[in-house]
Length: 473
Image (cartoon, rainbow, N blue to C red; front, side, top):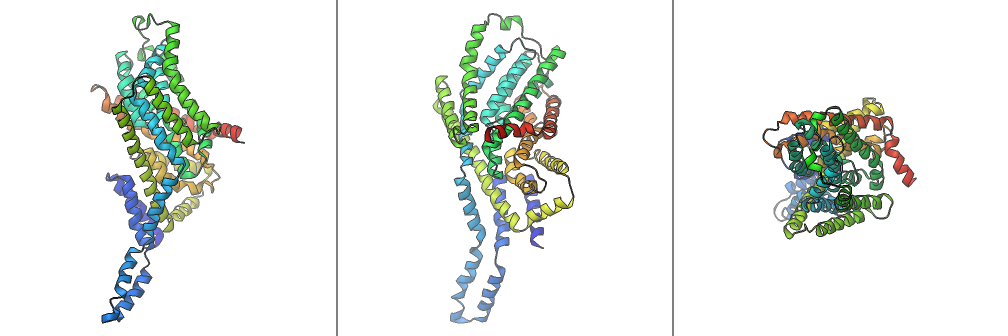
């Protein structure tokens, strides 16, 4: 087999193995080391030493044997693995990941989200579909803080979903709100996914945040408008609160609740984001400020206990380790894949198709969309997106624009049957009478809105580039 054929075998073997359920990070490292050993093995040198061994006898034989055996151990793949591990440890951009994760976990476990949802529910009580609107805004803020879809859907499924069902909301409608709201944090800064993409693509994280802000707000705003519009046209799917549920709540009380619950978390998030966008702090410094702010909020709300702090630290370390080992494995795998000529083989194949930039974008997004069914966003960004990055220059596509499209696309994979992970997260904690088909049906309108947002963004690319060009021109 030629080296490029071995590279394709390497990629195909990896896909088959992860489909069998093996841990992805360690599969990447094992495949990288295994195929890398073959790629870097100096067979000619070993044969020369072997020929010398075969021609020697007695005392001349034994001094050559250690040199022959050492040739099997002196393989550059081991140096490559160590260097890639050290490189990930030195990556300044990735330092922000555990700090943002800690901020999200401490906010989640300090019951701040409970207070936030209750406050927004009362504040929006006169708006059609008020409980759904409150759930979406809560999801947006919490998803922005934590960046983990499963955590947001699960928490809001335990907090807001039963409340909406008790308020006689349509089951599909309420399910779609929770599932779609949980994906908002993938794109809205400060998004952990964008940090990982920045580390993978070498695109400036501050420009990514600036570019993602308007598309993220546009999509969240479209969700809210859809909820209000549908609740207005079909009042039966989102009944108004009963008078006894909202009577006695005056304007001053609402203002006080907003000031004590909504504003602190909103100020924390926007302070972190503003510090990054306007160059007042690096992403790592802003993330540290956010982690400290989360701790202070938990202390102020008297919700910080030793068990909650310990659990937050444990979850932060576990998730951060997963991301970092994914990077180590991906870098090792990608280096060997490229050394064997796989990257050039893929590039030559794609360019031979004579695709237009739009056709290439559609093909790339379709592949990423399909990968989103069995894989998490972190695995797609770290492992598969780098395959497309060298081709962006060929088709004159800005990697910043491509990254925002990928972030939008990955949200669709969480909402698309039959592998819509958001639906399964919600089904896992929903009451028994809630059927998976109802959850899938509720996701469909929000899925359509994501595709519409992607189309609008392609037609009007200044939605992405306007803010970065304005701030950093």
